[in-house]
Length: 373
Image 1: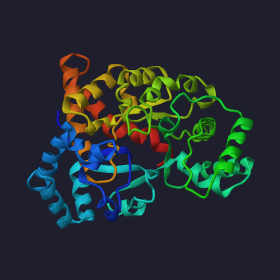
Image 2 (image 1 turned 120 degrees about the horizontal axis):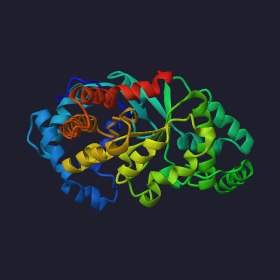
Image 3 (image 1 turned 90 degrees about the vertical axis):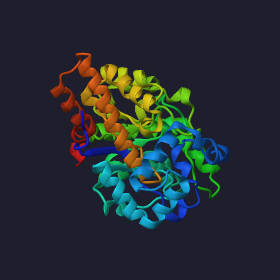
């Protein structure tokens, strides 16, 4: 099955780094979720992901598969031409960008919009961190928070929460009074430093406020689940922790997109998507970060139970444009392999498998995000 001609909707990715910022990091830093110097400067170059990717990048750039040769070729092309090359070879139709990742170091949406259609995913915790230092009273803060997301700003097609990183996915009901007391405590401790919001009651409260807005507009809410950098506790990143939230009827019409295949919790995520109508999945970050066999197995496990109307492509690309290309290459190839096996297993006919591939790579995202497009 050849899926190369199906244009991709990359429904979760991040802005590229400014060139002067990228120059401060080793190239291998883009190929690991770790940030310890020993990991970045040594061990990251000894993963299957890095070794495979170096050869694939060199083949596309027509240079030797060595970091030095790739760096020279990247420099000669320049970032804009390099990005155009990767976007074109990835056959991308549009990218949906969460621009809340290291916002001071990234290129703006407008830079990306010169190269490809872009839609914005608004990161809720970043919005809260921007507003809290500006406002003294919790009621006034909450009114301002609501004003920033209801209605969703122009160009915003979804919200994103990193509650998984900050306090875990076991989101619990929180009263206004408790949230207000936590807000007041945070204000007392502010010392003119950038705020990093890590208070569980306040984060849980704000996420649930945003879910009410999302339900009102049928706006997708993306949630980090599964593996990531060491900032998260992987035990609390299992999407099964979301059950109490999923059972709340007031959030029933807020679509939740569980990101990153919830790796290593693919089966748990697939189960949730099979029984909760508001749960959707994607397989970005797991693809292209795992080994080839690991990527294949992640998609296969997701499809054991997941309705094919609920699975979407993304790359989770960030920092460098290569990740957009690598995600597209392996997303198509391994989805095709898994669907071919499903045909051999008599799960699907050939026509059904190709229609499902189109849905996962493009049409499901267009349908889910369509009210905002």
